Image (cartoon, rainbow, N blue to C red; front, side, top):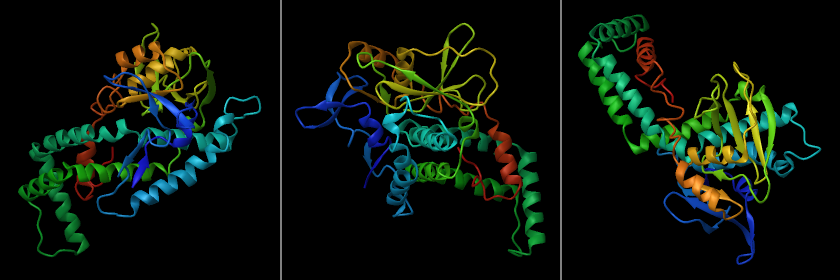
Length: 342
């Protein structure tokens, strides 16, 4: 089954009328290649087995159907009207767009690839736990007490050696493409039942561009930045970080600009079309799409593509205290690492 990382209807908002095919077309800007007019909204971000779950054969079809019915179709009803004179960001619209935006982020190719990095962070933290004799002994004592008072598994006894063996086997089993794919699919499904309150209650704005100098959309369309006091732009802050700004181009001439309800230390400067497009290029996994061929778009894309690598230079988790998280999870008797989520 072929599933979408970016919805077809959204891509159509950036298309041009392809006279050769009679269908909407996209100009494709790809890392290391010349621009091509042959991309199609129907297939540009559609991949075989994208939401395939290694142990749940029906999960991909279920997710694709739910994404369309629950999150894409309601927004599609007014997608082309966003920014129009009668459009309003009422509670219902903001709720729908909040979920639409956050799902676009988590289902992107860049976010999917970032799971490799999240695994590296987890392995480092696990190894630190295993090297701490006092913590391993404390977990062994706690697990043995839990077993004794539960009355389950009589005669089973957790030694530090057995805990090291168990945790090492589990983390080794996590280091596989099948496990990363399962985690990715599970994370998309979890996001469907959540609402990012900081974005929902934030300030929603509209940015505009011209048809001659349009917005582009990347294969990672929901992006963030912070503009420092000196005017420098930092890419890839988390949705809840101080002074973060969130962008989602919804057509070649309209872009959502959201200021989440977070602490703000300075006035917000309205970004230019070039700044939005450069941010799209920075977050791109490998491609951006536009309604026109443009030397400037090509130049800015090739220079900036991949600058904000999710998990490395953007949305990085190296700074999080995963050592304490893993210790806490294990100490509380959760199946090793089962409670850890990226």
